Image (cartoon, rainbow, N blue to C red; front, side):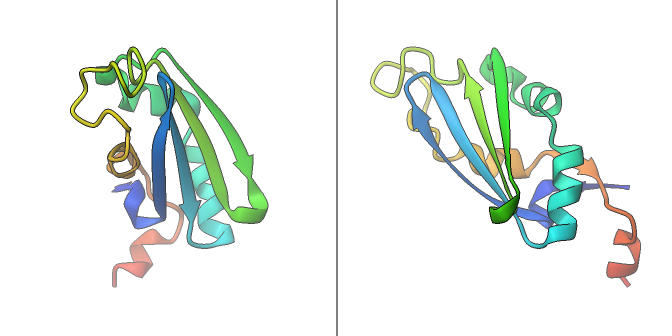
Length: 112
């Protein structure tokens, strides 16, 4: 079963030059472990492929139950020069939360 990442996490985002800086925060230790497994650099890059993202870096921050993601090439020219409607990348956290992932084990019982 597929679910959207928003079922397990929240996110924040912003610009860093031509890059987007994303933070994904899990609601529990169990969901953090699942997010670490499911939210890979490859899957994030595929999710944001329409934006021309050239590379994704990822850091795990277990004490915060968070992932830090940096999307390279998401804002061509940086915030001041990009032609993107969201030139500061503030909506891309929400866009990431729409990514579909496999539901964690036991998810079906939570729906009853």
